[in-house]
Length: 193
Image (cartoon, rainbow, N blue to C red; front, side, top):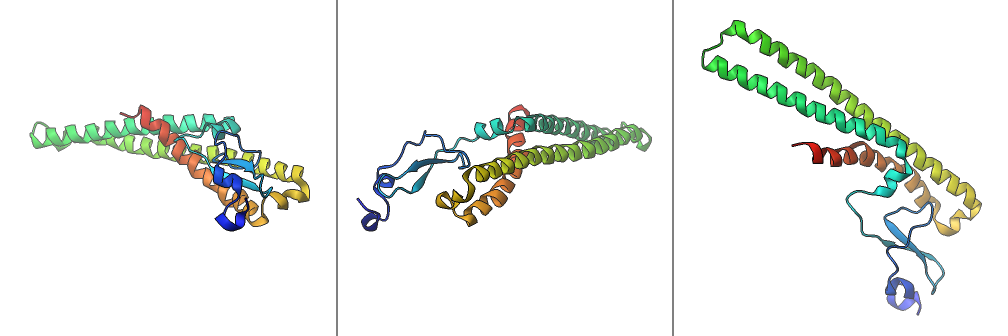
């Protein structure tokens, strides 16, 4: 069968094994196979999990930054609870007229301290996000570069230069939001009440 009549080659029409691992340098969200009819490389979208374990295995050094990010987010949550409880108790006591303005000094100091601590926990959580994504971006770009070196000038047979540049720049930059924001928030959602 040819591609002319159906708009796709015979192998693409039959489908491929979605569990077949993608070759080095091919995104893990696609299963790669070589078409028997036309000989070109084909890719089929693979079903995705909510959490991609392969990406985490590629860069284990980012785990510590992700863990610190989760801890700092949880600490920020606890500080937020302390601040809100302090505000609620102060307003209630002031409304009931059991406290006068002179008794509000201690709660206001506690609230101010929690605001300052929240500022620093937020700042360091953002820093941990940056460090996690920076490590991953560096590792991925090195892997892409090493793959290109191993392919030599023959890389044009497998992938176009525009696609390669797109993956090396935009695709790797998208990992910043995955490792810096999505993964920590994914695990934080399990521990936050």
